[in-house]
Length: 173
Image 1 (cartoon, rainbow, N blue to C red):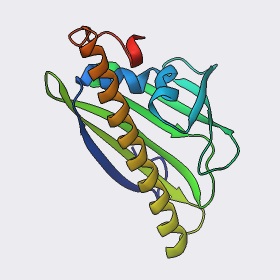
Image 2 (tube, rainbow, N blue to C red):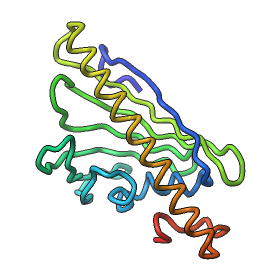
Image 3 (cartoon, rainbow, N blue to C red):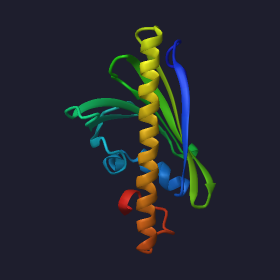
C-alpha cells in the first residue's frame, strides 16, 4: 500500500460470527455506518472519479462537536476488500490510509482485518507514539463496534427467520 515513504504500517483483526459477505456489505455500504460505528452520524457520497468513492463522513469523536471528514475508498467486492484514504487528518497525523479485508472462516463466521498505514509531520518519538496510540485505539474501537453490531443484527435476523438469507445489510436493508 505505502502512500508515503515514512509510513508506518500495522494490522488489527477480529473474528465475527457472521458470514463474510454480510460483514463485507456492512463495511462497503456506507449507509450502514451510523448503525455500525457509534461516532458516525451521517455519510454522504460526493462526486468521485470512476472506480472510487468519495465520502463526507459526519462524526462526533471523543466528546468534541460533530465534524466532517473526507474519505476516499476503492471497493473490491470479489476480494471482500475496501481500501481507504483519509483526505484530511488531525495532528500529529499527516496522513492515514488502509484497507478492510474480510475472510470467510466458515459458512457463518469471518475474520476481519483492518490494515493501516500512517505518517506524521514530525519524526520525533513523541509524535510517532501519539499517532500510533490513536490509530491503534481507533482501529480496535472500529473492529469491536463492527463485531458487536454485526453479530447482534445477524442474531436478530436469525430470530426473525431471516438468518439464512445473507442478502440484507444492517437491519435487513
